[in-house]
Length: 159
Length: 100
Image (cartoon, rainbow over the protein chains, first blue to last red):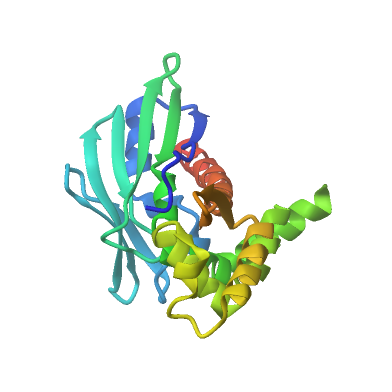
């Protein structure tokens, strides 16, 4: 174990002007309608992203050529309030069945017709337990490495 | 994010990548790292100094030797990336949810 210290989880909150039931449906059904396309891990164009609606269900991406890639699975399924998914993509966007982080999404009514959506991505210290999950990101010229260098360059140019 | 640029440079060297990968499995001392590598202990120490300067490893005294381990700052780079990834993703979700 390289990492014994807890890395703080990522917390994000977004308020959407729709009821919780609608927010839940948009989030969990037809995720591909809004999920950024830039980081598809398939070779062919993306056709769908599916969260099978049950505990233990797969979370996966499918391409137009029929190929699939698993992202994780459903750990907790409590519509329209809370879903917990495993995020099993390493830093190089490769699915690793032995690697698990968790993404929890909560949907809380905020007035009559709005919903607060709270997202937590946790267990990030596990990225440190496997060198192979860190190295490709920092190493790959076409992968996250490039993305990170671009980000670093932009951040440094702005400061 | 100057960290990321330094880290990318430090891991550009194959020997340093091997050393980093070994340290990611568990903390080790220089002597142990040098075993099985076709380079001398002083060379390993030099590589460790580069990794340390890049913020990728840290060291601490353990009796008479120094133990090196992967610095969690390496994971911070991933965390920073995921942080802005989720910003973009939730923005897109909000736009879709409110578009009907």
